[in-house]
Length: 238
Image (cartoon, rainbow, N blue to C red; front, side):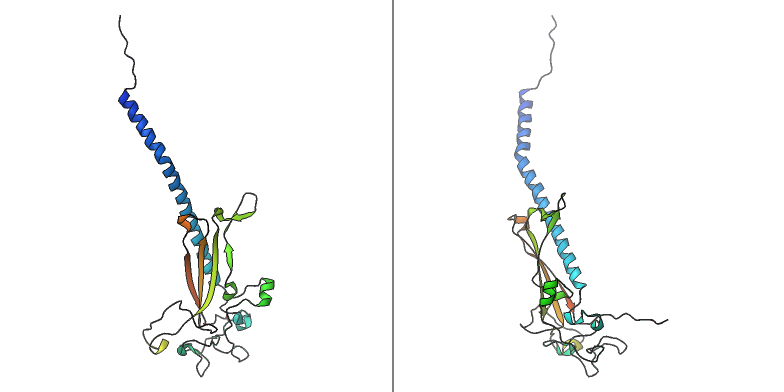
């Protein structure tokens, strides 16, 4: 009688298979955690992009309430604590401004306008009329995600907020000021309380109360806008 040999799994192969399966099962929670952390990082990157968009949006607003009016857009405002090299000169033009430029310290009526304090006017607050940079000071925005039902919900349930701060920065430089060839200037240094300068600092800070370590960072993006008036479009008569 011929004995047939049937293929089978050797004990050592079975042990190897069980060991490999055990390693895979043990590493599964870690792999899942890595995937979750990657999601947190992606959320953080999207939030940073949103903060950058907010900064760019603010830079597009009028520098001050005084020049939000179209008739005063090209006017350079007077300030109380600006660098002396940036103050108005006898011809009412800032140093280096060509005579053909519309930018001057006087408006179309021949009067000067002072820069206003960092605040949202009462009338604007009621009407929600934000027309210059410092109207956004102190605003807090919750990042939201649009659900399938069309309702806004908390941004991926991570409680991420954008906080905007606008302030005057010290625009004084060392030496003889802006008239020298090289200057030393400390950006984003706060000006004295109650004063106005030629630079407004913009800070947009990302925060989260989710408790996730990947999101427990305060990320701040900063920019600045200067008191240089604005362009006035040339009109052509036909």
